[in-house]
Length: 58
Image 1: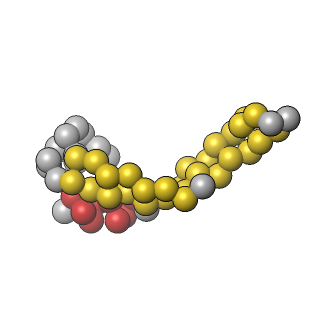
Image 2: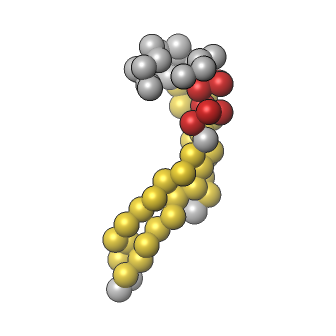
Image 3: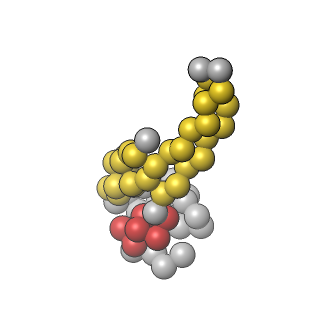
């Protein structure tokens, strides 16, 4: 599944203090399904893009 999320940075994130900036995360989730049930999830998202939006190089 491909997804996006819009949020406001109001708490500590990867050692970056809150900036109150709006950010947009893009990513995808890979699901492993067994017998009709999700048994594992793997998330992949662009951390560098998120940190760039916050003005951080971390």
